[in-house]
Amino acid sequence: MITVSDLGIQFGGSVLFQHADLQFTAGNCYGVIGANGAGKSTFLKILSGDLESTKGHVAIQPGVRMSVLKQDQFQYDAYSVLETVIMGNPRLYEVGKEKDALYEKPDFSDEDGLRASELEAEFAELGGWEAESEASQILQGLGVPVALHQDKMADTDGRLKVKVLLAQALFGHPDIIMLDEPTNNLDIASIDWLEDFLLDFPGTVITVSHDRHFLNTVCTHIVDIDYGKIKLYVGNYDFWYESSQLVQQLIRNKNKRNAEKIAELQQFIQRFSANKAKSKQATARRRLLDKLTVEEMPCSTRRYPFVGFTREREIGKDVLFVTDVCKTVDGVQLLDHVSFIAGRNEKIAFVGENELAQTTMFKILMGELEPDSGSVKWGVSSSQSYFPKDNSPYFDGCDLSLIDWIRQYSEKKDDVYLRGFLGRMLFSGEDVFKPVQVLSGGEKVRCMLSKMMLSGANCILLDQPTNHLDMESIQALNKGVSAFPGNVFLASHDHELLATTADRVIEFLPGGKIRDKLCSYDEYLAWRAEQNAQA
Image 1 (cartoon, helix red, strand yellow):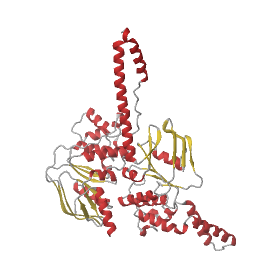
Image 2 (cartoon, rainbow, N blue to C red):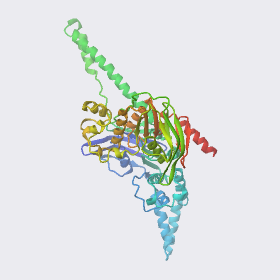
Image 3 (cartoon, rainbow, N blue to C red):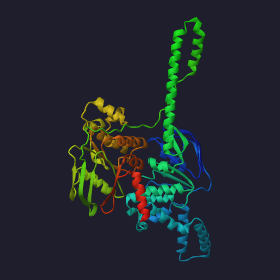
Image 4 (spheres, rainbow, N blue to C red):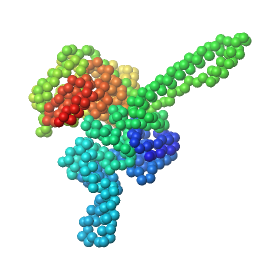
């Protein structure tokens, strides 16, 4: 168990949060949420002991082992994949290394023998003989094949490194697991496996995540960092969200009723304060008026952009015809005779582990790449707007300010309109004059979404649009895509976004083939699970 007492932290004169009193108990999973900059990752660092708090303290039961998801992908480059995972239990790794070193001594003494027996006993108690098997199982569950387990981390692909570090955090039956954005860069199968692992985990889990489906699946409690405070709520993310919206509405309704009552009392006082017959009533109502206050709603750190796509004209019957498209890149066939027809106003999800194939298809659809063979034909009434996975060409080497950058894509060029438009995308005040080169990843994504919103296209193509976005922006994007009346082609790691928008799923398979299913994303997952069970 972790007990947090009167915890607070500030940097300079800025207070992130204060007076936090919480308890984290075994058998529960706690999802930490809050706006960007609210202090989610800072809170985890304080709990793990990597950062000192300004005031208060964190108490952890003696003998409890905590495991934390590491963020430095290069820290273990000198070690093998399997060895890196086993290092998740430092004591087990140390005992194993010391034991092996003793046995390798050419002059093995009696004292060495006694020490070796002690180490053997501790090694067995810590589960050392099952360590490699357990580490291998976790790696395979996360999609790291056995053939790569002895490879050096330095030679391992970046996406696989993320999985190895996650496996390290899960290894060795820790009492407490702390995970900061564990689903980043994970494929669907790996996320499903992780969810099942955490649901069966008997200890305490504390996780920061922007993945709403993940939080809904695994969390028993939500830790909300907002208003400079940390509050604990029972339930998953959806329960917290609906509850918070209801509370806000109740406050607004109460304020409205109080404001109406105040106005009524003021009117009465003005009418009758000079009337002797009514003076006692007027005095009484003045006292009542003094007791009535309109509560100021606390200023939340959360900021929701407005994401809304509009189309200048309705699309015709013919939307998109993809016929026998083939594409090979660097000797790897990504697309092998891919054919499909997009129907009017369909919302199609591109899924599958082969994300490069998805991105290649997007580029071919937008004319940025030519297929080796086959053809792509858009309907004459269609117009397209594209969100690329890599938006750096739009910003690198660009000296324009934000307002001048967005002016390129707007029919209305005046500053008043553009500043109002950017304001809805959370760029206010002097922000609009910032050079686009210095914008953060999330700000660049909001810029690209703004560009798409101004296009008036009736077909929008989105390749991983939630990367770098906070929870509030993802929710706004989700709402905008769901409400869009035109065609959508979407690739994303966000389960909730796919589940609430897609009515058709195209899976890109290894070798370049596709699997086309006319169904929702959740229906597709259920169908795929059934197919895998039968295989």
